[in-house]
Length: 546
Image (tube, rainbow, N blue to C red):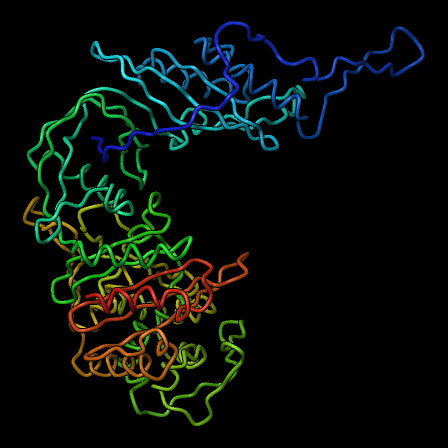
């Protein structure tokens, strides 16, 4: 099965053309060393050859790239592969380029190198079924030094053939395995990748799953067939003959989708999801950058303090915390051999639980770890909030993970660190569960189309727990860490911020989850810092538009 939305890859032609004729067939004389070193005083002493080390010179980069591209252009697969550091893999890929992708001719033009990286443009002819279709795109290669021979060679990667190829992927041309789709929103408005670039990965995934069920007929295409187990859907690169698109109805709201796209576009990397709490319908999903990995559905990040919504539900259910009840918030709390602290080491003397929630006091939650079983948080997340229940959204998705942990990792899990992993889809559903009182699995396409079974949580939230959670989130949205982002909001609403520390990052990942009436949303901004400042405005803009 393969699929994808139409996307012709167009590239500008670089000035320096590499053709079949007039190109050298070997390495530059500077590649490798022929110098010998006499190691002794007699002729019977062996001569040891020096192996060149260090990064390739500018001349080596230029010459190696020129010779490799010339051999590839000429169809000299063995020669081109021999100029790489992985002869076997390069031979297989370049052979498939000709035999499976049906590239009859290819002229490759090198651009200006930047260090050891050389961009190039491919002007190809796809020959299939009596058709000769031109195809132009850009790629790049990197020149490295072979550690054994010392020669300058191409650092082989699948992306050399095409920038979107990943390990295990294959480039193919032929009849499409699935027909194209015309995806429409909940009101019948068409949802195209041209109008909604951030939906491209979503549309590709929907085509892969529902192309045949939508009633269309396949065309002839050049596409990337993804490796088995890949989270990315197949992707069409060039349409040789158009098929007939079948109409696929989705749950997306085109107007809310546009708002979500505008909101995430203000960040170099961000993702947001909006769902309808009463049904689980996904109303908007947007990622920045617009085209690429679907972080909103398939991302896996520590959710930071937004996890305290689930942890609070657990503590309330266990009678360990409650709105209006006294609750400790010390500067530090040690558990499992680790000393935990609050942001800026603040404390709340004589405080109540709602104050600790609104200010996001870490120690207020971790201090309860000794009273909890190792699997209590896992059960609460699964049985009430549906986390990890193999959601059937209509496309590939990661459905959250709250593993059973002990000692320090258990304490960290209570504040959304440790082994806990979520994405905006999961955290939007968490707020939606609070808003509605029960888990409704998010979905993009009605389950009636393919008779799939949506995930169901073991139990609804206890009414008293729900009411306290809504009060906690309302206080946070009006007088706590989420107040600035949610300023001016009216009606039934609540929110929770989060910042998740990640090793090696200067700034934590910013999180925000909230609801307003029958609309819930969540966003993550990797390395965004405080969630109220980075992810908060994204979520708030979606809630206001809804």
